[in-house]
Length: 65
Image (cartoon, rainbow, N blue to C red):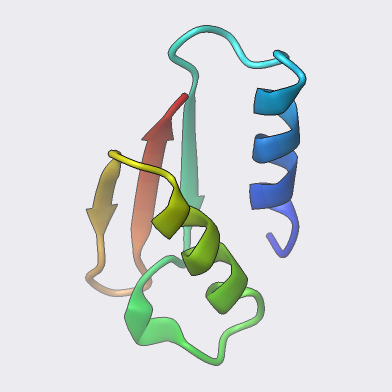
């Protein structure tokens, strides 16, 4: 999980994602600070507009590219 957001960004920049591809990230709740890579993932997701965030429990966020 510590590098999945980098993977999705790279795939998008190289045009390897299908139009309107959907990416789902787990453990995205701001309540989970201190968990491995949460801070980097949250920063990445904040730069991406739109999507649906569910911050209860561990958190879930989806993005459509």
